[in-house]
Length: 249
Image (cartoon, rainbow, N blue to C red; front, side, top):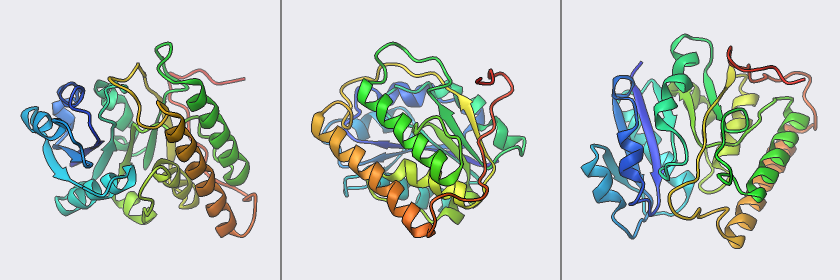
C-alpha cells in the first residue's frame, strides 16, 4: 500500500531529524512534516533529513493534520500514519503498527502506550488521568474499549475520508477515535513504546496547556454524544488486542 507518514510539528527542531531518521524506509513512500508556525529550525532540519515539508500557519494540531491529509490524498496515499515530532514515540515500531492494515485485519490501528513499555516519567500524571477518563467515557458512551489517545496511529486512506475530520486543535485525536467507532471501522490496538520527549510538551508541560487540552477533549466527547441522540449504543466495535499482548483480567 502507498504509505505516507504525517508529522505535525511546532518548534521541534531538536528532535525532528531523529524522528525522520528512525522511520523504516522500506515501508514508507513519503514522510510529510507539516511545519505548524514554528519559530525555530524545524523546517530546515526536516528538509535536511529528507522529508517533504508543508507549511500550515494556522496554529493547531488539527490544522496541521488536515494540511498533511490533503497533500497525502492528492498524491495517492492508501495508508496514512500519524506520528509526533518530539521523539517520544519509537518510529521504528511503525512496522508493527501498520501490520494489521497490510494484512487486511483492520482499518484503523491505535498505538497504545498503556499496553506498551513506557519510560518512567514519559507521561505526566495529568496526562495519565486525562487519558483514563477519556477512554472510560468512550467505553461508556460508544462501547469501544480504547486504552489510549496516543498520537501514533495508522488508518486506511479511504476509511479516513469517510470520517470527514473537522477538529482544528486539541480535539483531533479523540474526534478520530469517536468517528472510527461510529463508522464501524475495524479497530485494533497494538502496544507501542514511549519515552521522555525531547524538550517540553506544549500541552501537558504547562498548566494552561493541560487545562485547554482537557477542556477541549471533554467538550468533544460530550458534543458527539449529544449529536448521537442517545447515551449508550447497542453495539460498537471493540479494539482487538495484538496476538502478543496479554489479555487483561
